[in-house]
Image 1: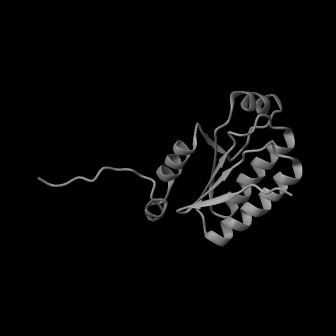
Image 2 (image 1 turned 90 degrees about the horizontal axis):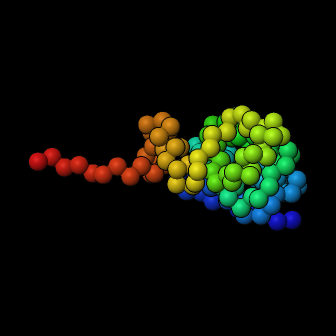
Length: 136
């Protein structure tokens, strides 16, 4: 069975879904991601769903469950790259995706995680591009 890759960037795990999710793949991702959060101590999870053309109710609920699992394991989840058709489908299915924050793209999702991070975690995220200032 094909698995969704989970990449580690600082203290963030990046999941890029590039194929239409089948039920078994979604369940496997749920297990794999939970284990990776524990193994790496990740503080954030970015799930890029740019590659998803459609989302059914099972995959929508699984995304919500993944966010809940992540939260229990002390990691915040951001879903990025949602197409308008996917958003419409989720609303029509009545799936509010509780606990999941969204951003337009991966860059904005990483910025959102960095802004919401606790002070000691911001250094770990290494995502803030604040210019260095020098005294005159």
